[in-house]
Length: 281
Image (cartoon, rainbow, N blue to C red; front, side, top):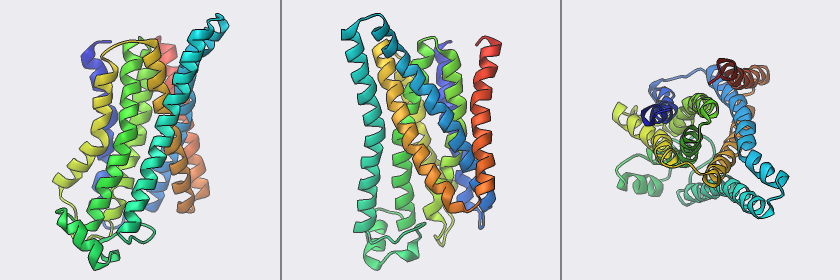
């Protein structure tokens, strides 16, 4: 696969985040639609977690089978370290963001400008935006962190000749990123003024752009150890997002709809994988 095609995979996976952002300009987006899309993304990511971890564990097990204990120890450390950075790093960011909320006296639930005391509103306005918009930027930044890891996995997989995995990652991450837009713009629901298309595009670049940047970096070289680290980093990020989405799914109160969405996500994940195997990609 050529460099241009690899970068296209990362670009498409990152650009789908733009699909959910226009919801900020709607007065009453359908709860059922958001619940179904979120659940579908959860199912896809459960498949991707298994797929990515399998790709990372395989060379570790191969080294152990070959009785190359030095290589095994190094690869195992990379696998554990990459997973820890991807998972615990985002947990650390989440705790930092919660601290920002407490310091801004932000109440629970979706943020809106009128929920902030004058002190918090003044602090946000000092940054040139409303309190809700400032929080949306923070959320987009957190999402961009794990999307960067996803791009690394796409680029490294494609450069390593794992085209099937790279395409599956692009499809899965693309489906998930399409739902991330709803999470980014949720704090904007209470703003008196609808966000401009320019601001929504900025949020999309912050949240989705790192997927492309990660793909650029990941496809720059091929190395088994680097591949393990990148896949583990992406797996940790995926698990973090899965846990977050599961909590979000519970808030919708649509258990049957959520169950069908998760099932569809798993079918899409495995179906895409089987299709690519059948086509010999």
